[in-house]
Length: 260
Ligand code: CO8
Image 1 (cartoon, protein in one colour):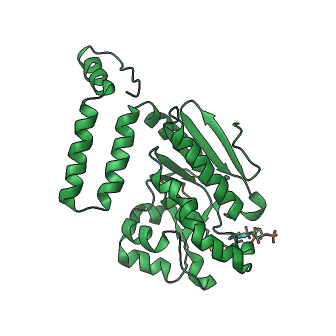
Image 2 (cartoon, rainbow, N blue to C red; image 1 turned 60 degrees about the horizontal axis):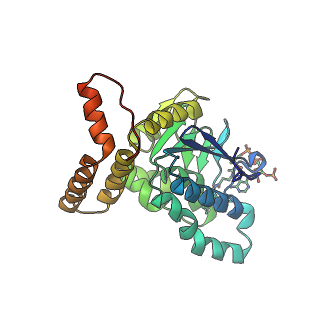
């Protein structure tokens, strides 16, 4: 464990992979103000650490997260702060250049599902369930749910679940395009870790550039996004790792990447 670990968020590094594990089992990993702050700090740290090439974010084997901490909601000042600092807390996730992989078992509700959607890849156990129950609490999914969910699955599927708060299983989430891969229940974390380790072995500049271009391109016109793609590719063609990969192919050996 690194010094970043707190009781609520356990932080571990395996090789080039950083693992963040939410650890509030008695509160079903509800995203309290403190837990969200710890996640944000851990992501900032991972993003700055040149040795970290992928991050796996997970909860327990039965619960990813039950969403925002409802016990903090009645305190109006916390609610108010929560809305205004939400962006600051979650911004490091959307700005993180290192790939983020969510490993979801059990429930991912409300803010928990929104947290998973801030990641780049979602691996879910087959009994995992997602929902946006905010409507039942008289609020809306205010941490990206009304925007990222329809963009992932389309307006008509999204409305079906945003307007009712109904749960939907991992298999349906995958069919709709919210989940990258459904695996046997109880194996989401190990599958996510294997994937993270494989990504960590690839040229890091290339990995980061692909993530950048996909995310920034999604917010641009196709012609502007294709220019981003071309510029990114041109940069990577100058990298040592690209030359090494090409030489290794020609010499029929495994490449050794340096991240340059
Ligand atoms: N917040 C705070 N405490 C919670 C939460 C939560 N979201 N969910 C569960 N808990 C607590 C319960 O109060 C209970 O505590 P206690 O033992 O002190 O009574 C403990 O966890 C166990 O809960 P249950 O006894 O209900 O356990 P079950 O396994 O039977 O049920 C459920 C678990 C299904 C998760 C159920 O508790 C539930 O429906 N919880 C509410 C889920 C919900 O509505 N989530 C949406 C919250 S709103 C939101 O996420 C909007 C985002 C807000 C900003 C946050 C940004 C990320």
